[in-house]
Image (cartoon, rainbow, N blue to C red):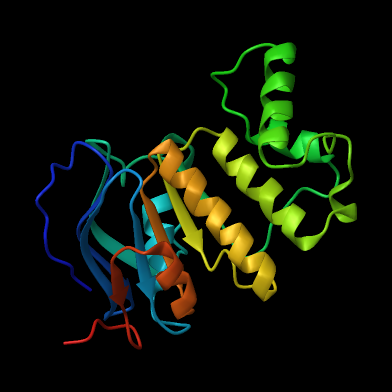
Length: 226
């Protein structure tokens, strides 16, 4: 999997430098790409093609059955040797993965950056995020009472409140119905662009790629097309 046009410095954005992800001796994905701040790079391919494993390597959570080599740079710093919590990479999955034992506000507070100090400041940050997402007054709600679209927005807010420097989307829209999918997808992309976050999105849906409006890299059965 390759892409051309590397005319920007790796001092900003996300840079995958000669990354190879393997399962045994088989190379699933080879990636050499720069994703500028606010840009969305889409990786498309069927299940088993290595898309999610690529995200796992970038985030530092690659499953143990896979191996990977190559450098991952974020805003000029190499991160592939860092612990996951040190990378400041936000990952959004197809399932919201909200903590059922915490309220909506509790879920958001869990993800809140440690740079925000004090109970009052943290509470204000959570309330402001909810209001911005059209969820004002939801802090005390049980996640189980939320609709699918509301759960998705809370999951995104939790990621954004951790103050990431890049956003990874792993089939993040696939479980929403068509209307919710369009609305939530637009919201995610708008938030990423407004915050200047490079986005690496893996999907099997061409409509996701079309909505992103950026470059698309296709992986077929674990290999890039010739």
